[in-house]
Structure formats: structure tokens, C-alpha cells
Amino acid sequence: MGCGTSTDKSRLQRFVLVDGRLQADPQQRLPGRGAYACDDACARRALARGGFSRSFRRAVPTDPDLLHSP
Image (tube, rainbow, N blue to C red; front, side, top):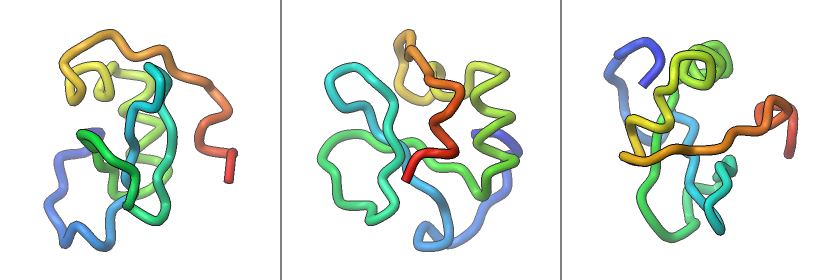
């Protein structure tokens, strides 16, 4: 999404939409479509370049502190 690297899904960070808001899913168990990033730098790049909106095929409001939340 941010860098285009391919790796095993278990090594990626998963993000989902919950009530229309982007949320990290560290346990990879929340329902729904997920978007994956290989690390924090990749996720920041995706936030800056609209990668999450492309992955979810809709406008995604993002919180700049998303990567700092538990």
C-alpha cells in the first residue's frame, strides 16, 4: 500500500474501517476489509499519499495520531 513490498501477511500491520474511521488492528481479528502496511514508515507513506482511500475504495478520514495509538 505504501511501498509495494510483498511479505507474509502475519508480518504486516492491518488497518480496518470501524464506523467509517480508520483503526489499527494489531491482533488482525476485526471484521471487514483490511489494508496492510509492512511497517510504520510504510503506513505513514500510505497516509500521506492516500493509500488507505485506494485500498478501501472510498474516502477515508485519517487521524494523524493513528500510528501512535495502541
